[in-house]
Amino acid sequence: MSRQDRQAATQLWSIRIQFDTGCRVMKLVPHLYEDRPGEIYVRNGKSWKLIGLIKPEHKEDGIITALDD
Image (cartoon, rainbow, N blue to C red; front, side, top):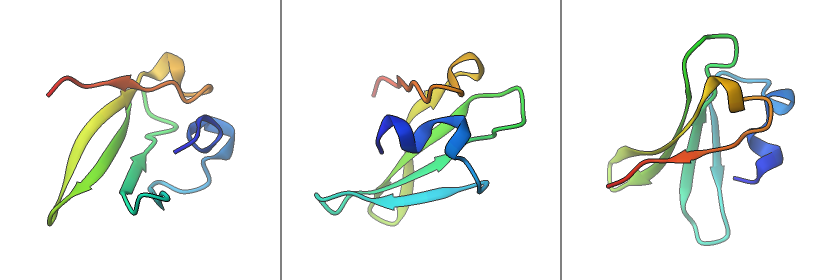
């Protein structure tokens, strides 16, 4: 997802699912009006894997903090 896709101003839904050109399926759960991080997931087989967080102070800009495996 592009930075613009992740910015608070573009969040109209509680969940956003997007396909990229490599056929990866990603999901953003922004928790826009809550004081908790937004969540970025990637589809892995039949489940979703959490790969990053958008800290509350970064929601407006959509900056992702990657999670270590």
